[in-house]
Picture 1 (cartoon, rainbow, N blue to C red):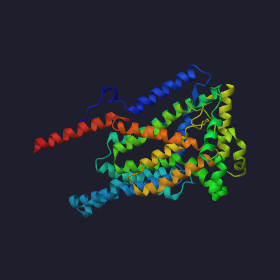
Picture 2 (cartoon, helix red, strand yellow):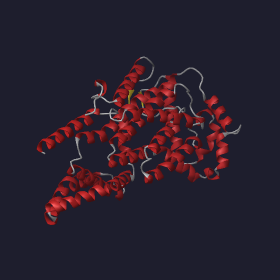
Picture 3 (tube, rainbow, N blue to C red):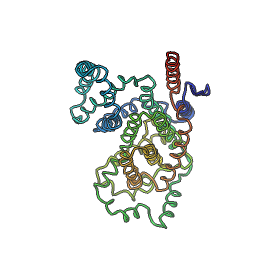
Picture 4 (cartoon, rainbow, N blue to C red):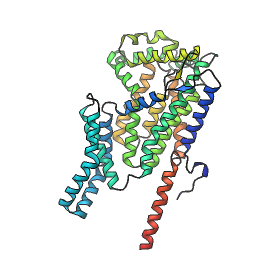
Length: 407
């Protein structure tokens, strides 16, 4: 059993960081004009909406099935050899019906009528994979915790991150938008970055390109879950823990970094540059208005609650940071790299073309991502729920001792 410091024996690094950041957020609301209430119900609603995003269950099922296909086939062949073909079929069908097909069928029936058929079928596939994991004695408490706890930690992070980000509205000093824009012009040899990108990429002026970039910008959590499913299905527990830790650390570090270079972004500081977007039907247009209303309420001291992720700051770009983290942890799967790289490139373009960020914000996002990845790779076993791995280590050592005694 790997020895751990008593500080991280039962509470992981990310759990400690999450708790300390939540405490800092609570103190911030207690000693400032920020509202003390937080819309946790909206955070859970957003999480559930993402998990039921159209074709996400189908994508997760496909990724998991591809990663587990050999293990499932080997298990079936071993079971045939042990129990015989006819006995295996009757027993497996009965167990499968009560353990998987019946509950999944009930859940699928309760889903909205608009849910794609592929997602309903995907539930059966996912349930089957969980069933096979149980049969192979791989569905331990620690494994279940590793799948569920990251989403709870994400909700906790949304509280501290959103509170710290909302505090940008309390600043009375100057913003850095003019300086960041000047750096962008320097990078583009004195030219306007947005105009230059449009000249380099003529397709970027088409409405359907804007719509695609708009979609890519708002589906980063879809992408997060797909990479999460890949690492879970591969069974690479340390890589999974490092991945979750990197994503959470990206937002914890990024939320604090906003206050080093406080800025709103081109769409708010230079609105004429992106005025053409208002003629296109985009999620960005509505969301940018919502964020401005929330920031204005903080500034005027009339905000009643803090809403998850619905405030304005641009340096560093955490969309770029989180997409880079996903790209990094896709490095061991060529098919997933083929999916992840276009996502990363699309988000790079979307951050600037949609007016959210300056080009220099990319560099800030990459630095934050690099720091988060470096830290997470140093503490994979103590990232979160370290007691789960320690308990399984003890169980495996006990089983090995029994085998040695029996031998």
